[in-house]
Amino acid sequence: MALYIGVAIVGFVLLGLATLLLVASRELDTYLQAREGALGRDAAAVLESGGPPALLRWMETPGTVPEGVAVYVLDTEGRDLAGKTLPSQYRSFVERFVLVGTRDEGQSFRPIRLAPLLVAPDGTRYAFLILPEGITPWGSPATLAALLAVALLVIAVVAALIARAFGRPITELQFAVRALAGGNIDARTPASLSRRDDELGVLARDVDTMATQLGGLLNSRQQLMRDMSHELRSPLARLQAALALADRKRALPGAELARINLEIERMNQAIGDVLRFTRLEAAPLQAKHLLRIEDLLETLVADERDEAAAREIQLELLTVPALDVVGDPSLLRSGFENVLRNAIRHAPTGSKVLIDARTTDSTITVLIEDRGPGVPENMLERIFDPYVRLGGDTDDRTGTGLGLAIARRVFEAHDGRIAAERAAPSGLRVRIELARAC
Image (tube, rainbow, N blue to C red; front, side, top):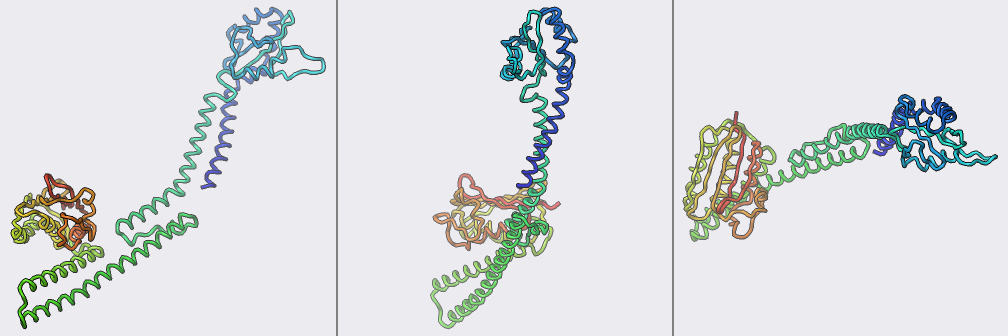
């Protein structure tokens, strides 16, 4: 970066000087010709022969003074013979280096005089000053525009070089980091970037190392979850068998037996959810088939009516035909089932859960809405994270904390999305969007 900035400064100075010389030489061409020509001698001859009035008439004659220059005939006080006002930016310069030549001079000293000296018949001295029009000591609009153009050119070239040297590698690094954040643990930075010897190369290698370590940790976690789930399933099965044998030998009280069976079933469900969640992280799509969402929802609602009826909850299904998608039937059913069971669990007794499936040209939208206590605004996104519980009256603690997380993984694996929003007047509305099969 320091090299690029140094080159930019040197390039701007060199190009600026070359441009300034080129523009100035063209703008001052007429001025130099007038200054080096015979204009001053002609003025001196006219003044000597006819005095100041003749000089004024001569200067006012068209064609006498070339275009692009201004002529001033100044007396010892700096007053112009024709009454013209000297530009303020030249006054100090004229006073120090021009007017001194019109005043008394000693015999052994002659001050610097940068303008021809005209002497009238009565002995009055005048300075014959030629100045370029439209050009100040700080340049002209053309020179300023030229320098600005050079500056913009140098900036554009250096910016392009910096973008090529730094912008593209940073973009490639950004893509790799975004892929990692999106769950692709196999994402790595390009070899051309990781082989660089500068700071970007070091950063790219660090990102690759981090990705490798993250991949190892995720694989270890998934393997641990699978192993633990399988190891817990076996003791649960033996516990159920032992409980059945104990009940045969000596009948257990009905309430205690039902409670034990309920807790075993909850543990079994929790282990099953962990296994499903782990499998979704590893390989979400096992099979792809063309299926109709309306048929899947009708079957699901029919299967869940008994559970809903036990809580005096009514299920209402609204669908339209031809809701075709391509996906894994078992996974999609699991996703919809988790959302629907969550709605049934939180719906108050005697209320209704609405399942509304609709479509546009390219998207299928399924709304599952209950009339429960709802979810706080700041938790609408977090309820889809694993093991997130709301606390308070909005959480009955009967779920495993993985149902909605599994649903999100299922629908995202089908290039869809799931979101929650507050329903009116109360309750929660879950919106599921899937791509419609062409």
